[in-house]
Image (cartoon, rainbow, N blue to C red; front, side, top):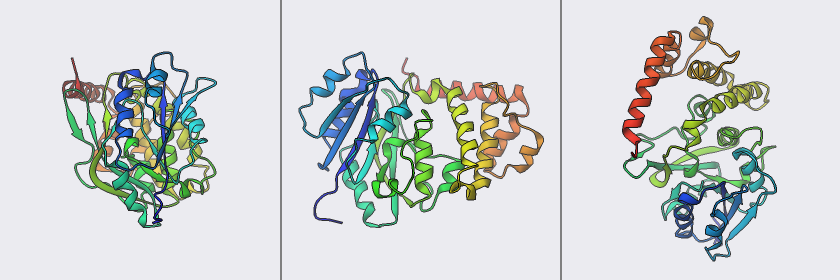
Length: 308
């Protein structure tokens, strides 16, 4: 590694994110690794987000106000065009990093085959904290594993830009909620993923997380991605994993959206994923039972994470 510390570009997209923004920005400023630039992409916020970011008098922060409002994937695609770094990291304005995040992760790239470094991360709110990984996640060439069971939380990621440049597309603005999944899966076809077994970031759970409130959009984007992936020359070799993802997404979306992607008995016999996921596929053939499982899961989640 060069004696000159490589530049890390940090992307932060913001739309009316004033509630937690100060904390997120402080967690960047307090990094022990100092050679970074923050691309702050203001997606036409109408709150005090601009005032908050501009209150940090730091020349490494570059503020951009979007000419038009876009969804999250489109905003990330636009923001990334302004990145100058050798590495890329992404932090949303309601999440946080711990001070050693960049310093510790960047050391893993001494291996030239590494394209992606992830760390453990803490799911948290004002009442509860829970680490994402209880055991070491898959490492190395992990494209199949990522397609079938995407296990990465974006705030934990550090990416080598050299590998991004090998792709014909950075963030794809055709996706909003799964734009990170799409990028990381494609990137994993170019290089290896490595895991840093320390909690270096935190993903804040609250009632406005898109993961929970816009499930229908997630499913629709997944079906769109599956359709495109089957035609992608690089991803074609992962057809078994793509088919498994399609069947599991059909099962998960049965009671959420109305579409043509319905399960049939053939799917049950074709599915070759994990035992736990196979149970999920099987249960979806029994709508009443499946609905009960979904309700139980929602109740347990509410009991674990409710701040009321």
